[in-house]
Image 1: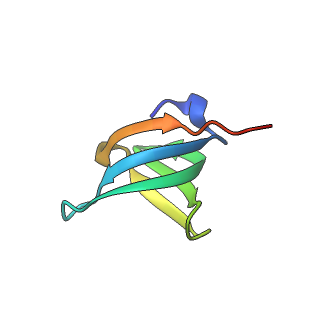
Image 2: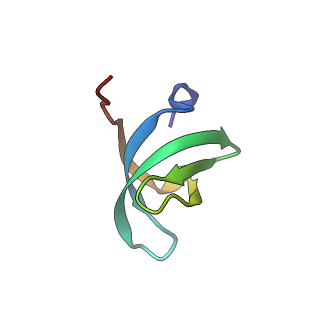
Image 3: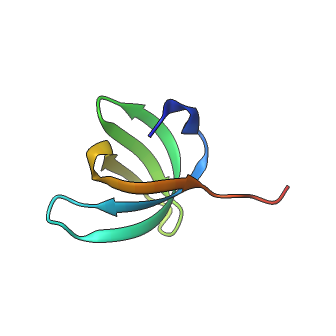
Amino acid sequence: MPAKYLGWLVEIIYEDQIGKITKRRIQVKSIRSGLIKADDLLTGQPRTFRESGLLAWHPIKTTA
């Protein structure tokens, strides 16, 4: 995921280390050393995702 997504709301398709695939909505906080730190919008909790586990992503359009 490019660094341009810092601070953005993004929807991701993610495969964890045991092969479980999930769809999540996150707010990207930092991207460094192959790790994405973000807030999960569903739970409100901070999460860390491996960049290598991202299968797809796209920004979420917000209405302003």
